[in-house]
Image (cartoon, rainbow, N blue to C red; front, side):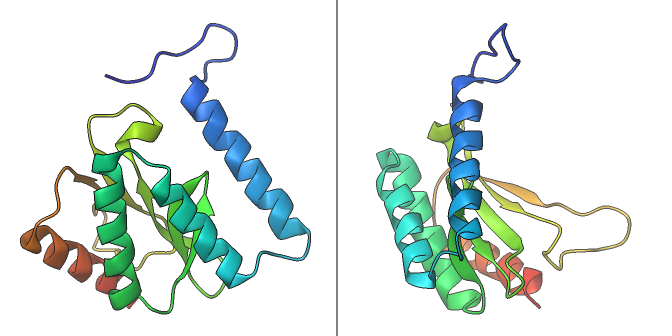
Length: 147
């Protein structure tokens, strides 16, 4: 069930927390940037803080990203694990179900991803479980996104 909106500002508590996390990330980057090791540790910490089902998916996504898109750098984005190109633009992020009280997690590609295919193409993929077939699909999409 989606999170309930508040009357005061239209944002849920989860959405406000994500915005606060992003503001903290921007402040850290503005102070000379975050070292890659620190950014990677922030991703690992974000994954560790997830509920068990989300954590399993996020760990597999992270491993798949590491193998299939080694040129991307891990970082957090709105408090979620994300992977950015050399220009610092997020290519893909993992949106865990528990963060926004959703029924599934999602792998969301941003406009820096090379997935263009005509006038319409998918950029968000629901993830409910991780299987060998899912891993191969995710790996293929990731490889295309960074090609």
